[in-house]
Image (cartoon, rainbow, N blue to C red):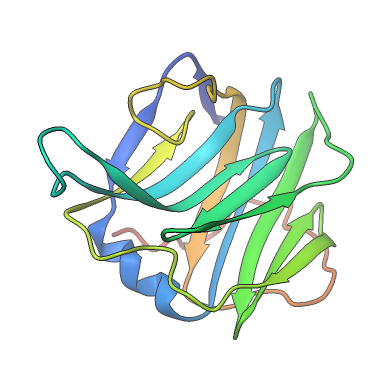
Length: 173
C-alpha cells in the first residue's frame, strides 16, 4: 500500500475548481497515521490584493487534534481522544447548516456552520503537510495520508463503518 508521507515537506495543489463544492453539502474523508499534531491538510484561499505580499486566508485546516473552518472569523473544534501512530479514518461532513466531525466512523463533534468557508480569491490551494505552503508557523505534519476524498454530497450524518478498501472510481479534477 502506498500513502503520502509528510515530514518537513509541503505538497500543494491549485484547486480552483473545488471552491464551489463548499457552497452546499460536502464530505472530506481520509485515513491518516499521525506522529504529531501538525496540520494534516489545509484548503485555503489566498489573496495578495491588500498590498505588496499581504495574504488573507480562509478555508479549512485539519490536524489529528482539531479543525479550523472559516472565512474571516474562524470556528475552532477540538477532537477528543487524539490517536497517534495508528491509522485513523477522519470525515468532515456538512449537511444543510450542520458540520459533523467523525473519527473512525463515530461522530465526535457537530456544530452549526452555514457559510462557504472560502472567500472569492485569486488562488485556491489544497496543501498536505501544513496549512501554508511556506511550511512555517510550527504546524508541520509528520505522518501519512491515504484515500483522501472530497465529495459534493453529505455521505454520513450518523455513525458509520469507515471504508476499508481503496475507492474504486475516483473523480479527478
